[in-house]
Image (cartoon, rainbow, N blue to C red; front, side, top):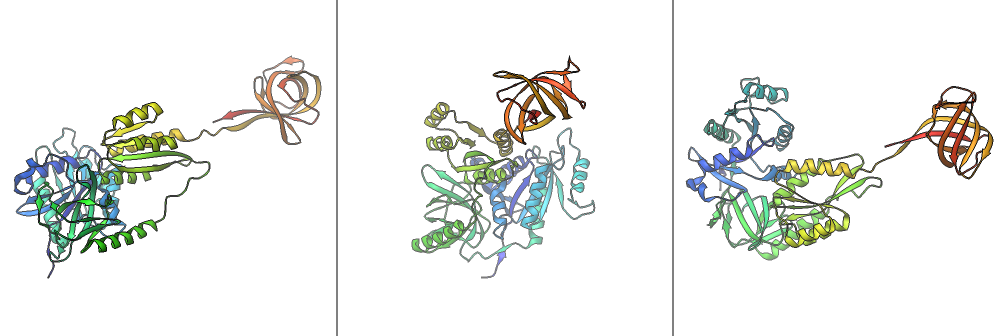
Length: 488
């Protein structure tokens, strides 16, 4: 059958707090198919909105990790991206991260200048900040379309959706509805009643009942299909989100999926995929002299886990590294606490609770459980924890040096010496070490200094002087006194 135009799949990306969630919420409430947005009370990973009678699929995932994961597999999770830039702040670091991800995916994007309703909104500043970072908007020397929007009032959002449909028409996005379904896993969750479940986006073909779905090394029978509203449907076509339950294990966000006719075929394909995954290079082993911050990661959905792991890779230190002990979906359990305890690690909980037994055990064993609802706050805390793990390196700095000429008296601890200045400054109270033929034989401190039979606080000029040192080893002619300080 010939390929047909399919609805575009849209990823909204940009800096934290620039209005991604507000924009998605407004679109969901205002334009969801059949006006059933009121029925969607929980978080949904993706949904279909209608604009001018045409469906558009929006991805709503933490960090859009599926979007990033698929770049490495030569596919793009989204067809078009909306890059949000707040009118009151302009381009920020994560705006540039999002832009880099969009460019790597090789997909078109539209800019949404958000928060235009705010009192401190400065649209011209926002435009200029984009210009400075190579985002050339229409009318400003470039061809990147943009819309000025407010997710509070809805101003500009219809125009933004017009631009999305125009970009989709120009991109000529097509699919063959008669083909067997292929696409990617947007996110996966461990459902207490249904087991391992996943939200899929179909990029080509149609998903129908019967047969098995295989995503990486996980597979599931297609006994029922749910749409983004949680309603059971008989089939899902190109660009539609669909939820499947009963996977053999949680499939990773970003995994490509395909259909197998029988369980035997599904198992064989999952096994083959598992071999490929096992062949991927493993994380570098611990390096001697480098401190580690062992972490146990628990999150609400698999997409969140992937987003967190992606952010943690960015946290580096020349003398410390993050080590992931385990990661998974669901509340913090007793076994998580035991895992952290065994390695002196920290538990990172993202949008999940902690079991009562786990909390009690963590308190008893002094295991830290850090909870977050914003990934970038999580990253900042992990960076802080990592810095605290860095071993303190103490280095000795030489202050002054002299050569022993004669021993006048010596006791168990103290001895009075005659010495000749060589270099630096020797001061009363300095720590010192005694060197014999270049080798350290003892350590002590300088108790007194005399020059021209007068007590002085320091020796810093050439000549002979007297000194009383506290040291357990008796000095002899030719030994060197080295005054030093320990610097961290």
